[in-house]
Each structure stands twice: as structure tokens, then as C-alpha cells.
Length: 183
Image (cartoon, helix red, strand yellow):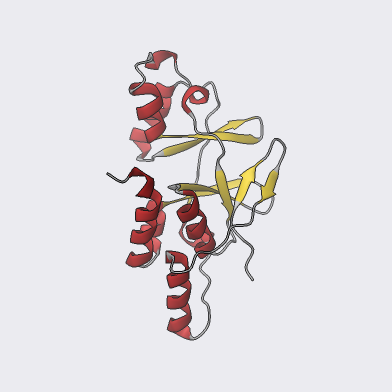
């Protein structure tokens, strides 16, 4: 059995949290397709499709600078780090909803004011199907990726999965992640 790719931050360090697979999920179909392909499970790892070179911001980084960095680098999220701990993540959606739509003065807002907390992550050597399952179950669009020494080594996004996985898997994941936004 593969180690599950579902971790959450605690005050000091990281804890493992078991995640159940759901029958008929994109993860299950992906595993079956891989099995059918070669009559054995082919386990693609998170490191195979994640993007590397993730930079973090401090909690006091102005929102305007975060938005500019997102625009310049064509990214949608920036992790927030205090000392050596990742304490949150600022997404383009966070900036839109918690800064712009709130009517607050953008020039006074910082990463700490608008970030999402409870950041989920997985390990670079985890099976991609476990990461997909976590993203489906938690309705999240991005996972931070850590190595075995808890060092941030990348990020796994819906875009990474859509480029690296079969279309039906990435399509179902996108639908599952967005299901709570049904019209």
C-alpha cells in the first residue's frame, strides 16, 4: 500500500492524516488505466509533474507586491513563510475576494491579512494518484510539495495535473475541486 499524500501543518512540524479513496473517483480510474496499460500498477510520482522553484513571501509582504509577482511570473499562488514554518498561502482568488472585493485599502494589506491558512501538502515521492485524491476530497487547486526533510521543493497545481495526466482524470479533478461553486 502506498503512503498517503495528505499532510497538514501543526504548530511545530507536520502530521500525517489518512485519506480514504472513493470508488469511481478519478484516482481509481487513473490507477486502473495504468494497471490495464502494463498489467501492473505504474506509479507516477508527484515530482514527475510538479513545478519547482517556489518562492515564499513573508507575512508582512504588501499585497500589491504579491499581485505584481503573480502577474510577472504568471503564477496563481505564493506560500507565506514565517521563520521556517509555512503558515499560509496567498492565491489570486484570496487577493480578489479578501482584498479587492472587501473594499479595504490595498496599499495597507499584507500577505498575512489575505492568506489562506491550513495549507495542504504532499511529498515529492508520493504517488500522483494520492495527490489527486487529496485535491478531489478537499476541493483544493494546489498542493505544496515537500521533500523527506520537510523542505519546500515545489507546488502541484491543477494545471500541472492537466498537462501530466490523462484528460479524463484532470477533467474530473477540476470538476470535483469546483463542485462547491456550482451555479
